Length: 184
Image (cartoon, rainbow, N blue to C red; front, side):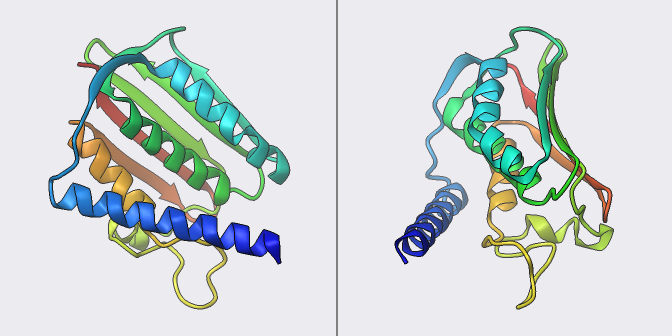
């Protein structure tokens, strides 16, 4: 009973925090704090944080970097939330295979790709997953938890930082999330 209560309270807390984040974004009350930081280090921290979840599911989880350091000037907290949400989704919706995070850069942009071999998203549902409280699988018989706020907030965060988020997916084959972020 204690485990169920703990899990439920954690999920409720995450839901409330997501609703608060969304309301801050939409009311334009979110204060951005820009600093320079190494994106490679942040992705390595995210990999460490999600390694156990991937191991428990028996899926391969790796991260590759074009350079040993990729510096960007952005909001550390928001970028961390974006990465954690995308990686968490990839692991959550992958039953077998792998999740891969790839980081590269151009002279003015950082490019993050999170690729998985998960359940994928039907083409007709791609746009709907960015709507608040919507998911690719809905109704009483859905298999995955969540309120349908994660990708809505993630996309809004990326756009607030001047970046772009794109999703390519095929049902039963997996998903690729591409995030382009300005380096300055």
